[in-house]
Image (cartoon, rainbow, N blue to C red; front, side, top):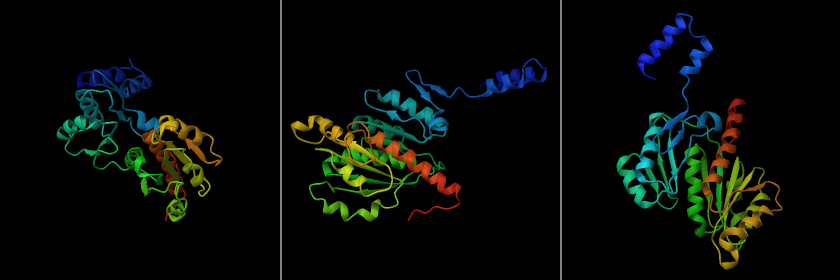
Length: 262
C-alpha cells in the first residue's frame, strides 16, 4: 500500500468516516502476489503450515524467476520441484545462494533467520533405483525443517537388511518408504513402527509393474494399518505430509516442555 493511500485511510479513521474494522480490513494484505503469469499464494504458510511450493515442470525460466523473487520479498524460503538442469543453470546464476539437487530435481533458496519446528522423519528406500524419488522426499523434508535419517537399499529381496536398521526407525515421528516393483516394503516397515508410514510407489520395475501401478495397488492393499499412500513417484507429496506430521509431533513435545527424541 502506498503512503498516500495509507494517509487517506488514517485521516478517514480519525474523522470518523471509516470504522475501525473496515480500516483494519483495508490494511490487511491480500495474500496474493501477482507476477503477471502466476498468482502466488503468500498466505499459505499461515493457513497450511508451510509456504507455497513451485512446480517447475512446464514453466518458463522467466516465470520461475519472478515467482522466486516474489516469495523472497515476503521473507519466504523458496522451494521448487521438477526443475530441469537447463532451468537450474539459469536459476543458480540468478540466485547464487540457491541449492540444486540434480538427482531430486529440486531447487531451494534458503532465507537466513527462518527457523522451523521440524520433528524427525526416517526415509527408507527399497533399492538404489528409487533414489531420485527418495531424494525429492528428502529435500522436501529438509525444507520443512525436519531432521531426516536415511536407510537405503533394504528391499524385501533381502529382508535381513531392514532388521539391521530397526534402531534408526525407532522414535521417528513418521517414516517415508519409497519402493517400486511390487511395492511390498511399506507393509513390512509398518509392522515394526508405532508411527504413520507414508508409502511412495515408484515407476521402477519391468512390464507388469505398469509404470508403478502394481506398486501403488500393492501399497493401497497393505495389511499394515499405519500405512497411507501417495501418488506414483510423488516424493514431494510424501515429504510434505510426513513433514506436517513431524511438525505437529514436535510442537506437541515443545508445548509439553520436553523433547523425547533420541
